[in-house]
Image 1 (cartoon, one colour):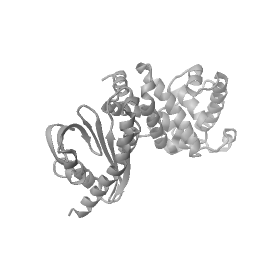
Image 2: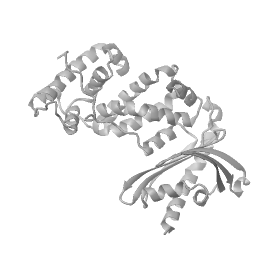
Image 3: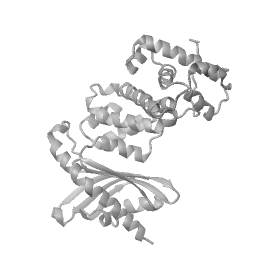
Image 4: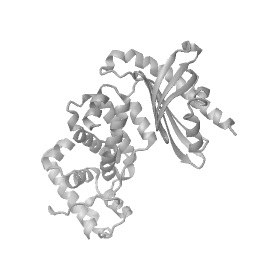
Length: 165
Length: 176
């Protein structure tokens, strides 16, 4: 069954289709929530799915469900990460942290991500994992393109310092 | 800095996983006519799940609106059930489609008007997190048409669903 068909059936109130849609989208949304919300990732995924099922009827173009769901996931992951206070480090201080090489472990990767601000994690994920342009990221995050550019720059600097130092 | 290397998206990166409890909470958010109740039961997952998915023998023990259930078709995890309501509902018959997998059960009346979700995950040694969702969830495109019925259903199941879980707890505690 195509995901667009699941969306249409879910919009008509078919709960089994909605459940199948949740199962279809979750692996992808789980990666987005994981990279942005890190420790609060499971809460972020739950909030994302709740927002999706509550608003699926308002989705006008079922074929655009992935981009629509990703936008919700990014928003909820940032919000959840902020609420849980998973970030407090100033990225400009990152030069002083221990270096990490390509053989970094999962724990170290988590530490790198947690040292960034949620908004910085979001632009990194959208630019480098999802391949979005800066304009697309600006639309996904509802911020001006200039803000995306500056956040991306700071995130890259912070990330590279820790990833390749 | 602009030429930052492509970030490796591998298993070292944190990934949020969909559990059965989260799945039930999300689905319940789409059904304003249902009530969700969550409880940690003092019984191992396997025992809880075997009990709540024994439709013919055990479900009529804890579901007080049902007098009997018969499984009329079984294809792997897909079941078709024929339930008879209790005397309060004049023993009316109800046909249900169920999708069952370990820790997850979604039941819908045919045609979809009434939905029941049961979900479970091991909570700790000898304990299980159990979620029960139940109520009206008609498959209509415009929910505004049925909103008063949904509100009434939610109000009724606010009492009914916790009673069911208490009955499950009670029955499990009495089993050898």
